[in-house]
Length: 413
Image (cartoon, rainbow, N blue to C red):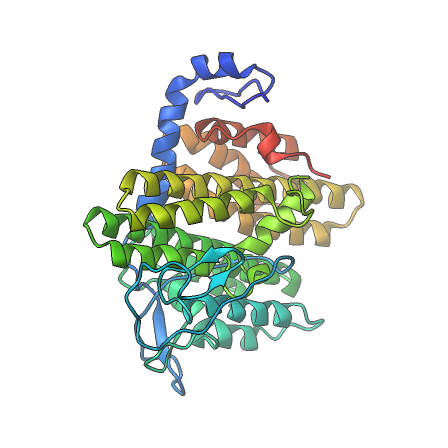
């Protein structure tokens, strides 16, 4: 199985044998660890980063609460139990229910319901005439994730991250960058000014399901590692549990987990059941291993598990980034420029999951970013930037850093 090895200064030969690749690009693997770690630490902060509203309020008064999730709508299932309103002592795996094979070691019974907000948003976005006001109400005020004190977690709060520092804001140079992207799509302003409802829909849906929720899933893993390093294993495993609650949660098909399964289907990288993406299997196994490592006080093991999660996330969103460049080209070939614009916006929204992390590696990622942005920047006409082949090739150095093979990525079906 050849591994894609790449020079940071140029393109890679995807047909090199693994031994040659490993010798030639050993330094790239070292930088790969830095890349994965930068994905983590830049998420930054403690566990309660999201604004919440009191039930019955208009959302204008908020207090601090917790993290997030995201995704497309299709595939997978879930299960779990309700737990006491008072957060009990953590660390007893299975006492707090489970979702799709991950047994919680702490009470995340309300956190895992955030993805139900996304399910309702997806339903609204699927209407023939989209009521962006109704979508915004759920985004800003929240609905399903009610805390024991009566306040409600809101996805808009996750995205705004008031008072918190994370990689997206550092990269885009402004606080609340996730919220700015989603809000501009909701309101038809900024980069979405003058765009059709179908184009705006992509910014809203993927901005919520993927950009925001992946950012806050990573935030929880980072918080878990930080607390574990400080010796707070109970707090650490709670953050780690929140990571799965926000990646999969009560309705996996509406979180990033659902996106992973869709892309696995697109690229022929599903597991034996024919439904679950291999990347999602990797993430689930890594989340379980990381949970157990934290409980055992094994910080190195938890860090390795977190990096495995991020490697698999890179696989999923590389697939998404490439797929929509291909779809844009197909639309243009058919003369359907309106659909090409929709797919350009969709590709942009998926690409922005990875862009800040690639930016964090500095000059090594600059070529990748410039190439892919030329394809997806909405200030450019569809098809005027990089081709689908150029988009795929631009990702090779990043795969090389993380030892992602072409078999891991698969072939677009």
